[in-house]
Length: 242
View 1: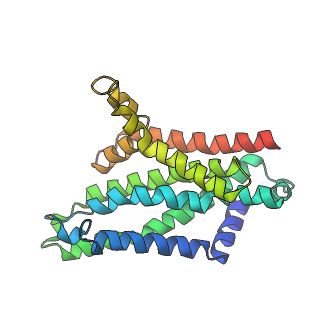
View 2: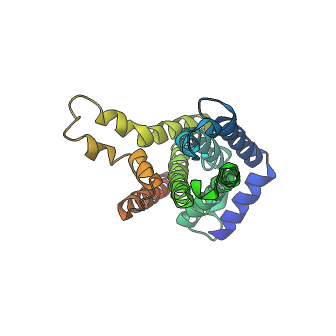
């Protein structure tokens, strides 16, 4: 598995993909968080990165499928997937190796945004005004959400040999899991009865719960289950194809 991981990491960073993704995310989030008046933390009445953590899921919904769309679609299209399967590794090791490689790139993209927290802490009247514990839990929620999107994006890539179709399918699935259940719960027939239960099937409810600073085992179980299901579904699709 780790040989696949190292190979994928080298492949990602030997091309412009990794640098474009990291640069795009940091540029967009930097402008949104610090420059644009509607979202800028400098215009908030209190020291908080709330705007960053509110906007980041929207960007990740698009960015992560754009990264993962080539994970298996390109391999299937060029025929290198069959070549990889001739190596002394199992299909499960191949899938998990690729998953951890793409997840590493996504988490590495999030890492520089810690500068936002340090900058806000230095700009605050007193460092205590910035709640470090709450910010840490928000980063945990964002990392778990990114890990889930990575698995979903890889699953979309196994469903098609066309990278564009894989990207569109990945964005659609991430969007449905992020906000689809919220929209469904607000339909007239569900409000006041089943709305809360329906929202629990979506990512947003669990991400919001963790972002409040409450690390609930049910939220962690939801994310780990979603990651496991998406990666195992990728394995099953590839196994049926081969």
